[in-house]
Structure formats: structure tokens, C-alpha cells
Image 1 (cartoon, rainbow, N blue to C red):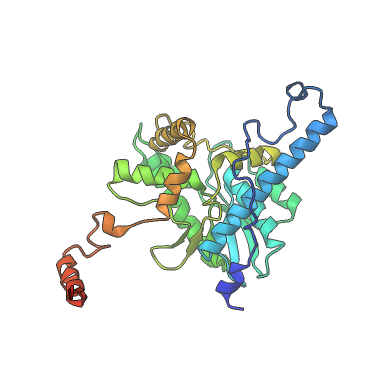
Image 2: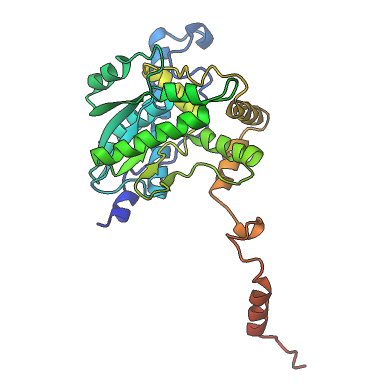
Length: 319
């Protein structure tokens, strides 16, 4: 079986399922008072069913993304970048779950970049990873001091922090022989990046589910590309992951990404399904209907027209 055909049957995630499960209250046991005369056992059973649906949906959506973009092949060693946030915890757990049923063999190794932020709880991730039996590395790089030194007062730290973090992780992937680097970006992250680039960068681009790094040395995959942030949040709360907040950038006011995030959230409330439609647009691009001269030969349209006209067969009315 070829790697591509193997990945096409990787996780069999295409079982029809309700994709619009309400998770307004997460998947924790609901308030018994809200369920009338239901017993505590009934409420807990309902919560378990809701959680199982949520987990299956995340598994299926991640499996679909892996299949659609050929993210995982036989023998891959996948470096799972674990920040301590809800997205990366969820990605690791979903990949572990999918790994157990995969007809192709691949390994996972978790890597956390300790950026030496003051107050960073260094024990949390090692304790968690030891408890679930996952191989891991803690990569120590003092990027925090560099970011603080190089970023002018009042400016956001995200761009430089991201660049330094990416460089450190890419280089370490080579050291440990990882064939893929998995990042925990989800559907909303991709859409936010699309609008940030349009509003502030003058370009129509987002985050691709699969990417070859500029130097050609690393392949980056985003298994949660099809997953909604609300589902990931609910799953993270149900799993009780030991979340580590980012104190470097999370406290910065008026971040452009936060503004875009709020805009998208407002759209989704006022127009349910809009984000789903927008994400579908990211996967359904028509270069001839845009204006990028590198992607479409507008100057050559006359030649195409002439060729098609020359091949026409005009039907002559013999009557």
C-alpha cells in the first residue's frame, strides 16, 4: 500500500454525525436543577454522551484534515509542539487517540519550548507528560529576554516572539529527526490570520493545513485545521488539562488578532454558519476571479480566446 493510499484509510473518520452539537455549557455534568427531575446519575450519563460526541467529532475532523492534506505517512516521527494551552493539549490527545487505530505506523514526541518567562511553572508539563506516558523534550531558550529587549515600549511582542519560537523549534526538529512538526492551530486561527493579512498586510493568505518551511527542511502540519475553537475549549475543560497561560503576550491590550477574533465571534453569533462558509472559501479558491497576475495569466486571455474560437464548429442551418 502506498503512503497516500494508506493515509486515505488512516482513521476512517467519515461516519455521519451531528456537527452542530450544542456545547454552551461545555461537557461537564450539567446543573441538575436545569434538568428538572433528572437524577444525578442521569445528568452524568447525559454529560458522558455529550463528551463522547464531542470527542468523536474532533477525531473525525482531525482525521479528515490528515487525509485531505496527506499529513501523516508510514514511519513519520511527529514533533508535537506543546505550549501548555488548550489547543496543543487537545492536538496531542487527539493524535494519540488516532494513533491507536491507524493502519500506518507513526510516532509522537512532545516538545515544549521553555522561553524563560518569569513565573513559568516548569514542573507542569513534565508532570503531565510523565503521567500519560508520552516521550517529550523541554527545550530551554531564553527568547523572553530577547523579545523584551528588542521590542519598543508599547509595541506588541507577538511577531518577534513567534519568529524566535519558530526558529528554535524548526532547528530542534532536525536534531531529533522529526519528519513533521505539528502545530495546534484551529479553524478560527486560520480565519483570523486571513483577515489580519487582508487588513494589515495587503495579502490574501492564511495558515495552510500543511506547509513546507522556507528553507525546505521542515514540513509543518495543522491537524486541528477543521476543528472549531469552541469544541476545543469544551474538550479541554472536560479533560481538565493543566493549562499554562502565556503571560508574555496575553496581557497586551488591543492586539490586532484579538480585535479580529472578537469580530469573527460577533459574526458567528449574528449569522450562524458564517465562519464555516468562510473557511470553505479558503479551500475553494478561483484564481481567475481574483487579480494576482502570478497565479493567473490575464494577459494571455486574448490568445486563449483566439484558440477557442478557432476550434469552434459552427452549426450551419441547411434549410
